Image (cartoon, rainbow, N blue to C red; front, side, top):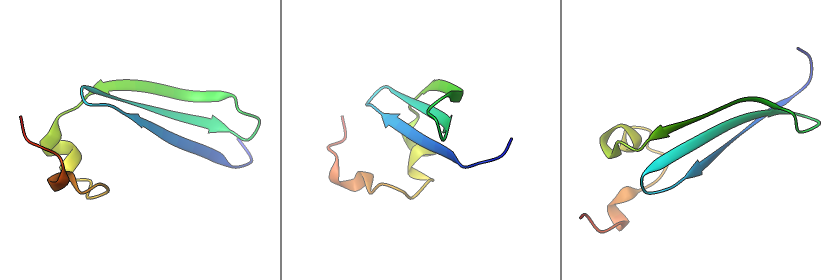
Length: 54
């Protein structure tokens, strides 16, 4: 496969959906999985300390 690939995440409280697309916008791979806060916090991408703990 030649060309650039693009990725995105749709992050919600209970699930995350990830998608990889090629330049023209064709979906190469898409997957949803449940949120496990401890695993997500390890990514160090978002500071979850601002969110209220339930």
